[in-house]
Image 1 (cartoon, rainbow, N blue to C red):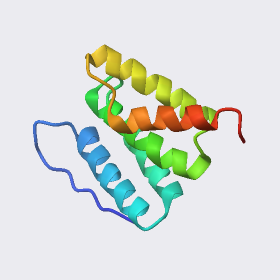
Image 2 (cartoon, helix red, strand yellow):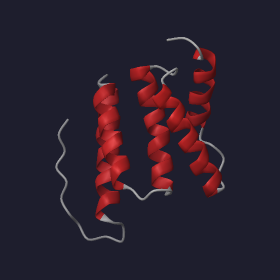
Image 3 (cartoon, rainbow, N blue to C red):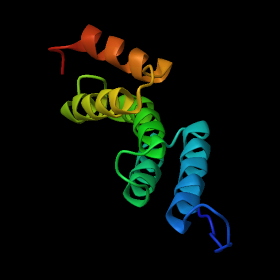
Length: 114
């Protein structure tokens, strides 16, 4: 899916706006069964947001579900992202989102399986 992004003047930064469009593109790719494209869009979005932000937490959590479907929940990359998401949630003082908890549970169930 190709998206065009036009600059608009708002209170949010251009990177955050572009990240929103990448997130939408990822959701559209997932609906059509192209999880690998969804992963790429979410990774691009992550590169655009501020480190440690709520946006980063949201994107990492979204990436966990997509990446789990593409690479499997035993993937080392999944474990790295889970650790990052837990760190971000603790730093923000929020409870982990259900998608993160689901990812942790599925990883625990598949631990040690290729």
